[in-house]
Amino acid sequence: MANSNSKNCFARAPLTVLLASAALLLGCCAAITRAHPVQAASNAGFEAADFAGTWNWMFEGKVFATMILERKGDQFTGSITNGTIELDSEGKIASATPAPGSAEIVKTSLEGETLHVVSKDGDETTEWLVTLKSPQEAEVRVTGPGVPANFPPIHAEKVK
Image (cartoon, rainbow, N blue to C red; front, side):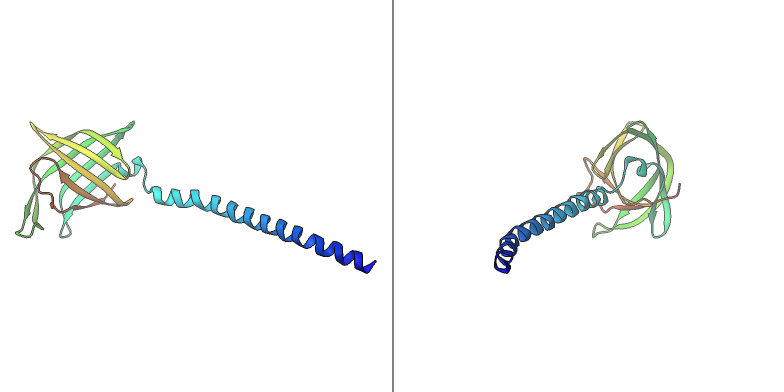
């Protein structure tokens, strides 16, 4: 009798190991499945609404221009006050100062975490790329014809 019990015990051992392995594998898959959306959400970054607000463009701790972005549906409207940027011989910003006037934001599109902004001042249009670094900080790059490829980014801070 003891002999038949030990046979049943040993016969069940592979089945028990198989079931335990399957349960462990299922648990690992469930944990990975749960962790994946959390990781994807954290990598997704910012939402379009995070771009809305008043952004001060900074140089050496001073504001030289202000961009106001107001969300209207899936677009943004607003304006950018004029500023003058001078580059040094190495292509770094040497000075940035306010200038009179402002440009109207006439077109925007969101691609990933970058907001493409087109502003118009009279007949002159300028293209900007706004990339959020945090909900309160952004990097602004001017782009388009005539802009040097190595034009440095502008630091922007959200104030409202």
